[in-house]
Image (cartoon, rainbow, N blue to C red; front, side, top):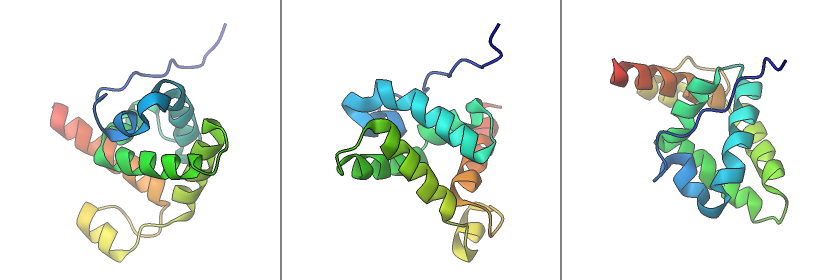
Length: 122
């Protein structure tokens, strides 16, 4: 018996990460969900909120840029995840989005998007 959670489907299939990935969306979605959740330690529902957001679109733009190097989609997602985890939240971003300074950029925006999504749906 597997304890692995199923990957939630996107709520936003016109833009965000899904829309940015176009023809790669079906393959990229579960890979990005798993990579981001694994890197940030955040639940899949929070990662979905991030990928459905405009920040997910920016993440998707970076995946597309990494894909242009000619590697497989999984490697492009891994490289983008590592890049976003290496960046940290700085003063202005902290001030604009109320995310603590110094934490990894990807973690900060996944949490931020989850909170915004929860506030929107309640």
